[in-house]
Image (cartoon, rainbow, N blue to C red; front, side, top):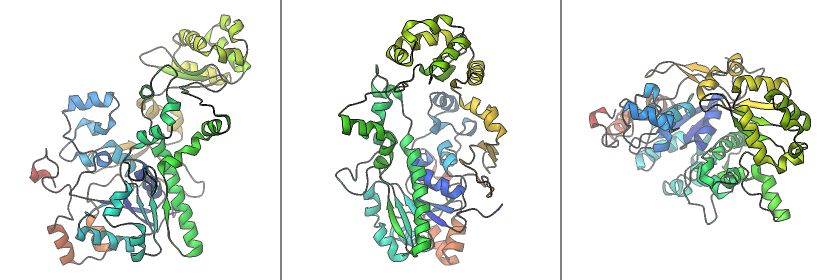
Length: 446
């Protein structure tokens, strides 16, 4: 494989859940050596997904059908190490390494500081007081490595009255109005469900900000701290709604699936169990083509739906009429017919549909990665490609502590005696320390 853009860059990763891990996923995919620093003395529940005893296989299957993919272990078997088998972790931790160290202890903190001396970047997305209590702020870290770039990405920033408020993506999106806008006009906000768009956007922008800081360091020779408030990061995406309020004092209200002017614009049922298609008519010509393909000549001449403004005014009635006709068609056939006629449309694909998608497979999007525990599995591939820089996924997510020997001995230069003491003290090990996982017998923790 040709040299990747971030080859030679080493990243210390103290990220949790998804927003932060997505930053380091993107950095790792393009060549950075990302080392996750994880404690053996505490479980990171939404990162490795191990804070409760997994239920039996039948219950795991039922939970997965309900969308709780945190429990969708390979073959629905949690094993004795579910923290290594979580789908979420295995998705974002590919191409990364894992070392164990508890930075809340003097020994673990010193290990981490030694690692910082060997790193170019440090990424964390904890609540600010967590880093402050550990005394690992940028002012401290730059004393050990003046060239360090540190990305901090808390929910609401490093200052202000909400600084230490704890939040997941869904709470952040609620605070800035995204849930309100996404909800349906005739429903309460929770009916729209969770999408965690803010996490995804923060991950992309976080990786971009690190790349920019590396560029500045290359020019000036200086590292720096990057502050990315996840709430503020997402707000510009809602910019037109925010400006509508600031200049017009107008609250747009819940939008659901509706467009500002297009109608029909939404998702409509098709033949089969829970099969749907998304349709957007952006012109009168598209509307006439839709009516023709649906076999609905009466809708095409209905005065209530004659123009775009007419259709928008009667959009609730129109959606019901469209649904009555789409129910007679398969989503796949309707998708192909509408696209051929120039109508914006797409089926609502299940995970299985996506894996079988002829477009994704023709492009070779999914990649196989072998795992020492649960075999070779297919993973979502890279999010972009570069014409002159071939790339691919390189290895599966690391087991907890899998790379301890490499990091401690080769990178940090620990002697045999130092490494043995780190093992005896419980800093170094594979799996969680005995007693940390309450439902697991102590002898099976490692």
